[in-house]
Length: 251
Image 1 (tube, helix red, strand yellow):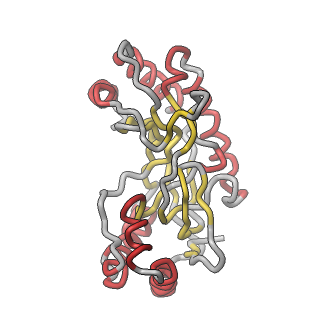
Image 2 (cartoon, rainbow, N blue to C red; image 1 turned 180 degrees about the vertical axis):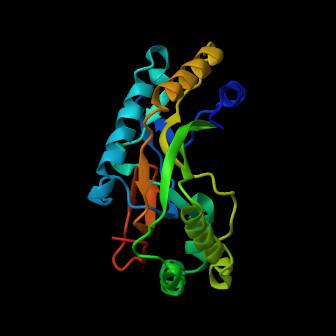
């Protein structure tokens, strides 16, 4: 997904993201898109040990925004919201339907994660939390992100086993939580706005490839110290509710 030929292919299928829409003066704002997700703490709240990582991500985002003719194409996410999604859970119409049909949905969701985390905590090695390294930019149909790869087998298995514990949990399945995507570790930097009819797609793909080559010598590493159940109302803020469950991988 980070190879030039992947950009050349994917850039042909870019779409405007419905998660942002123009307001009365034409400025794009985040639309209501509620749900729950399991994430590493967003950059503004993550361990100080990851501060250099998130600072680097912010500089990468700015370099993309500085790509001249393509700056208007991308709607940047607030750097404070940068995070690694560990497991997609429920969102948009599925979330609203779940709340309408089950008034206790959110309390039951938190209870399920309390149980999952308590059971899984026994398998965590406190002095060896998962570590994931930036691999490069990836183009998705409606957004642009940085992909990550595990530094070792342990880092991979910690996250994959956690996802398995979540998606195979009978109580979560009964709540309507199911796996809809394979795990492509990434941190989204922005979404696409209006796709101009005269967009030079070949040139855009080339410039992204050149950025990847520029960054490849010194790619930062994220240490995942915590996995947190977080709620969101749109794509710009992910917040913990009171007593929301947390899994601690390390300090």
